[in-house]
Length: 240
Image (cartoon, rainbow, N blue to C red; front, side, top):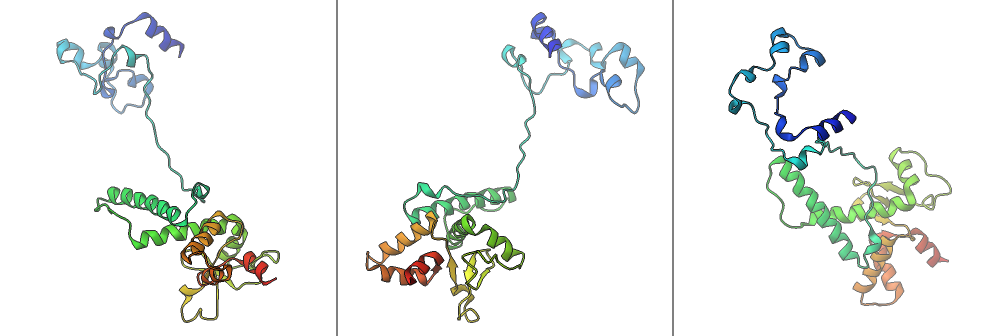
């Protein structure tokens, strides 16, 4: 660092010329060279015997400002996140939330298609919207049932203190916790999705059902929710 500072202070950029890596004589003393040429160490690069106008030029141009800046190569390192959570508390509507997530997934699909040289998807489709909702279901479940999810993945018993211990729960193909009902063998997709009571996502879903039922009685909204979801603490309180 000090040596570079001395060079910058005592010289100008016009006094320096660029030397390509293959012509750099310093490589003979600092790197392993299969066939070293002793004459090059004494006489210097071959282009020195040519007119100065034919000397090699760098691929990028330098000026007084850039000459004082140390140029470095930047490397981007990406890692796979084990868990990614959306900021659901910024949303007050279930439809706006899952559509925002769907647009995020659409952007990812566009990046993948561009990298693979495939046509870019232009608009949302039912599969992307379904994936967005599934992602949000899993986020809500992971907030409270992380230990249960780990147990179900390893096919071990759920802790007795878990609120899901009394339910016949399992993980579906998408990794969503569901309650196995009596009609499971006929239609496994109809099993209710388990959602924790203390979740912003659960609140937005319940609010959406209430608005779609035109603000009817609570019992009507609860029955509509039960067709798709099982909020265990919520139903336990109502049964009491």
